[in-house]
Length: 354
Image (cartoon, rainbow, N blue to C red; front, side, top):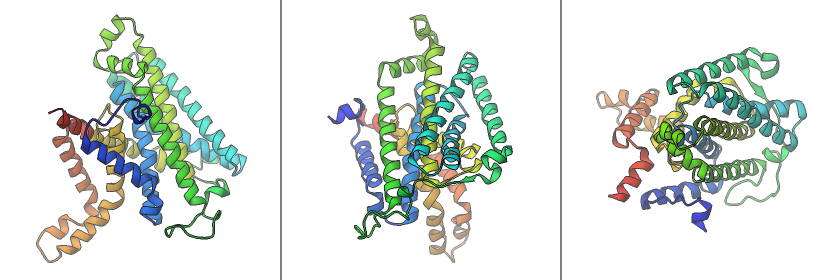
């Protein structure tokens, strides 16, 4: 049963299996295990970024396609929901139309980019996607009448998904039974289903052909596979899932702006998560996104506490200052790449083989 749900992709490592189960339990019961606005917000972001990173891994890890336009697809889904809620009101129909519309637009744009660009060498395709993504980001910033420009858009989502809606008066384990809880479980459920869908895709015949193309595209083409068609299909599917992740992000935040969904910083974060977790594994998206989002949210606070603990000692308080958290995040990334060149998931699975 479990093997069927996971499309036959078992962890193949006891440590990895334990980590995945722990992450699943923590995310499934996050509002009850870690009560508090910040912790629940962190859990929701982890869910969304797992889907976003998994969709990028379909392109990079399985298809060997290097793209810098993934935040553009992510942003299309987010702005789709924002615009739909702004013009259609705060109903669930607006969320559905915005999500589907954003995903469809992302797939069409990915199709056009892929059709005209995937025939060139990988580095040129990467540069083309970077140029298109930059152009879209500038366009969104300048169309302030529609997109809100640099200020972004604030909008209302259905009342049933906001703290104002209460479906029970009593608290359960100290947690209020309100729309914010429903909103979190909407994010969690959709993220889980999308991740399982991605697992199914990469372990289907389509996914196996992608792996063959990644390993040797000339050989794959010589035995009859249309390499460009498969790469375009993978790009479109990856873009659509990324847009759906963006739609979930917009539903959770109730705000969309260029900095939250279209910036190059988000693209760099996605790349780091893929590398840390392990390319071409899917489970790497779970591990990478969880570790990175936790570091983003809590490393600065931990460093501040450590700096206070060693106050009075030479040099250490300055090195551990909370203002230098990005420096230490970079150090942690370098160490992870050095000790886990195939990512954490790849290293754990290699350890199982030995």
